[in-house]
Length: 199
Image: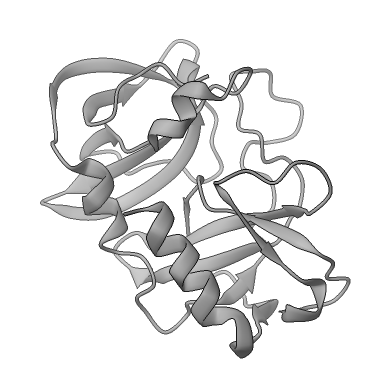
């Protein structure tokens, strides 16, 4: 489970250096912006990290806590600062496929999202690129951090009933090609679920 308190400033560990496909910027302030529910999720060390440069969001990622270390200082209301960027921009509701978040074969610490999965864009483009949430198979337990989306409402090849993982945001380059989109009829309800989760 997550253990680093919300709003604390952190830095990326250098030994071993986390090898990320989409790393944060070289400069800026990294802060924990995790939901309180992550502190109850046994066996899952992922935490939400946001990076701000000159007061603007520059990157977001769901990292294993072993990838970061606590520094001095805090940014109050970090989760609200992150939430302020959501559901804005012309590419919201598009589906992208960024590929592996860490190169194949890398040892832990790791992210849980391996493989080529679809992600739903929930903000962007902006200084942070595109912000997106991953889709997982709808089988299994549905948590408060999930939002169910029918396969019929996911317009891309081989779509299926899925759960949107609202607890994990990642920044991806805005150059990623659109592979599909979320159907218009469920955008409002999905947006309401995202706003409620980040309230």
